[in-house]
Length: 349
Ligand code: ADP
Ligand code: MG
Image (cartoon, rainbow, N blue to C red; front, side):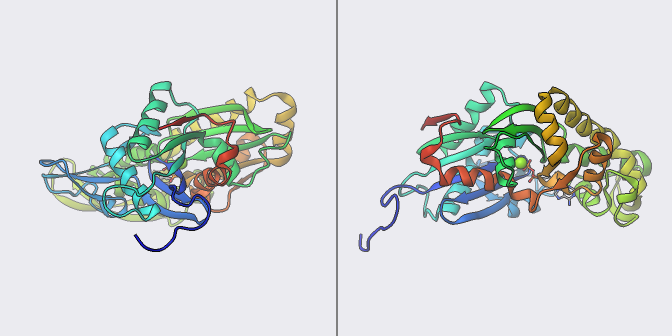
């Protein structure tokens, strides 16, 4: 081989941070920043087991694949539901992010990966195993709300309490962080996916129309809101299949119908925020009163959710800048300081 390898870690793998989300997986490469952002979806040939596509390309086939192809989301509710699928997703994205060619890395990367705070030991081991078998040299875990808080630029190392609420696809993570640790935390398996589910149910009930999860998500993005004053457009034409006749047809779904549908899951999210505030030591609760609450994750973009939480808690609430990137930026900051990673749980692959 010609040429020379230069720079830090010459001859060693790159260090990467991964936000392995239920909806989206993002990869941060040390010294470069975010290099990849893809839906956590894979498409597999049912007969051969071969992975046909990963990420955005696979998401386009969700719900409309021919019989011999299955498109699936290997992560559900924030944790691994399909181990092999997750391993494929990780291997593909890790190789793409680090520029590895062929099936294997020239040098294995060290990986910092985020996990929900409410994860069980078994679920945690599955993440470590999936990341190492996808080619990592070592795996460091960091709790998602901590990564979100770091990524949102909150003063996590200071002796003051900061509250972050990360609303992803599968889970909502609520935490008060102070001096590098989480002093109160709540984790709820209700987030963006649940909103899509209840919207699909409502459309079936109101219009007798069956729609898939992608259409339900499109409705949420177009006319979904957590408060009536916050709705975007007032209605939307939706295509689906008649629940009785089985034929394709359209229906006009209104913002009011969507608002009614999401009321219950939104209420659960707000209740989890209040519960976590209740569990917070008084001094730190005072800090949160002063500084307010920061929302991260894609769910933070639901119209009016910030105002709804502000109204129900009486605290100032703001949506982080680039809320979908906060967790991976937070793990990226840990990657930049991987040698000093002491607080976080780590294992060698
Ligand atoms: P995860 O960390 O679980 O992968 P993300 O933080 O990437 O989740 O957020 C994905 C979720 O955010 C999806 O449920 C998606 O529908 C939702 N989302 C993205 N943009 C918006 C928006 N503008 N309004 C409401 N929900 C949104
Ligand atoms: Mg997330």
